[in-house]
Length: 405
Image (cartoon, rainbow, N blue to C red; front, side, top):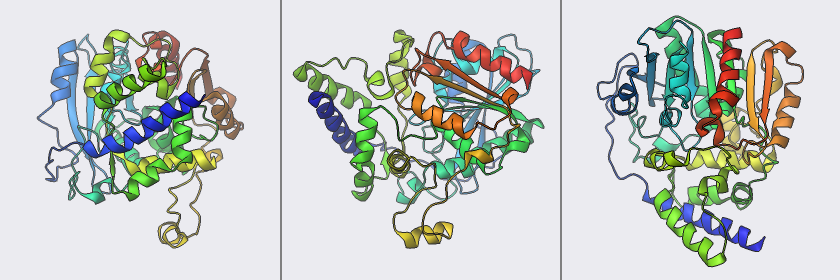
């Protein structure tokens, strides 16, 4: 037990140190029209078109000036245009849109949906490699990183949904993983987006987090590590995976611990990931986020509440919210007849079974034929996006849910 806590502490310190080694590259800040296509479609050329799919890259500008990259797979390998509604797919924390593409076409959700006839749109969240631009700020500016998942739910998600709706003229299905589910819960609980969505599929749903079994994540929250990093001036949080892996490997050997599967160390013991693809994953992930975003997650873990960011200082909360404590997101306000598909796993240490039970209690008045809770005992957090069996276990039932709505 002591050695486990020691590894967790060392890992947290490592994260705080290596965050300072963030990207050195300067980024352009020229404003791009929200309706323009991107000509430098690297992901399309390197990861999509090489597999025989049609791909476009679009730019979407949020209300607060962040310019997001959206990838569109408008046809499957048959080259026939999509004959089903659009599907907007949002990645989770420390990831980008590539997470939905880096397995084989038979295993990757982006390709599977395209081959199933859907018009697929993949979002690259703000601050990630393909969404670094802003109308007036650079990632080297402190102000660029002044956001948490509040802004993702209230700016990024609405901008992406509105863009796809305007571009296609159709209501869409939404898929979110991890942080992408929290964004949807927050938006839907405020009555937003429902008129442009057909349904949502939320994989490894994040809402309540105070019961998580992840010792690393819990310890980081309890020790206010993200808060400390923020006040030390670290606004962009980007763990250096290569350095971190070597560091932990040395610690594990010294303490005679089995830390070979670093991903499982953080997310739970993933059962079914294709080990041959891990190197490809590490070529692209993890992606940066804001330190403020991690503070917000830590607040959720400590309080058990789904609330807006707490500035701690009551005067700042009044300035932002008109009240001394942050408003909560009331999930019981999600329309009871709105179709929800939830996929969760018994080994997940971030979207754990006990917290999901609390979430399901919030949704207890939901229409029974509009809510599907699909549980898999063997799945952990990353299995829902990376498992070789995800098509059969998760995606096929999800597609059947989409077809019914």
